[in-house]
Length: 351
Image (tube, rainbow, N blue to C red; front, side, top):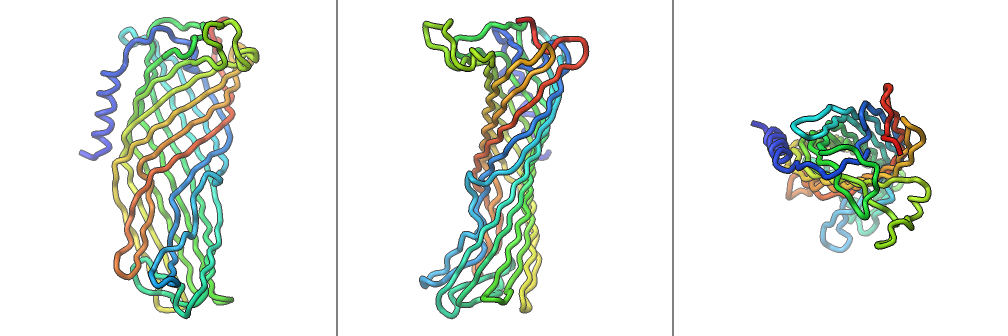
């Protein structure tokens, strides 16, 4: 049985054990009694591992140079869409089901310079053969990524919906779901010594995560003063409701790498590798929602994510082969979403 099958089975078992009836259910789930569709767009911040391909021996010891550095300034556009529908009561739980997906794209470019003695700037091709050694080297790196995902989840809540704000936080539902997501990178490096082109290196580095998750969520109060609940806060005076949800799961991370290298000499090469890792993915989501009508609302939604295993390439240096490693990654995605209720059922309960 594949590792992902164990993950899914463990998720379902955990959901059955973890889910308990909630005391009260607000309209935190998008569907109060019918079906809701939503669409949104915004920005994705994603800090990918560094690319360290070229090397230097200017200090007497070989060391890798950072050709592309991932940081929180790397961002791109993001879009998402989904729907959620009420599934009725299952053994005393009020259940909704939803399917959603997102896609984000980002790109950046960096330039690294090397200078020193006659053979202080060094390049190995992915198979470990020495491809260049010279006194100067300028390397331009172009990195582009697609970050995408799709999930199906169930929310379990007990009791009837309530429109009463909590003092601080009210847990409204528990979550169980299945998730597929991926990070696909296309990286291109070009090296020049003076005006001479000395190498070209292209790589694709794709990782796909398949697994399941559990979680919980509900409404919290933003700006209430303890003991003076009637005072409220800035969000409350604007009629904005605030919600939070937490998800955590285990995933099979399948990585595929292909590297193509070419230079002016007989060092052209192609190398492909793959591996599987077990990854943990956790996410914390915040929503600020403004009701526009009986069946429409506008939400500012932010996801904060941690992925324990994201592929990082360690390239051959003549002594060790090229191999796939991994690092942890933090990401955030902020979007403005429009929620629309379908059919005759109003989206929200009466105020």
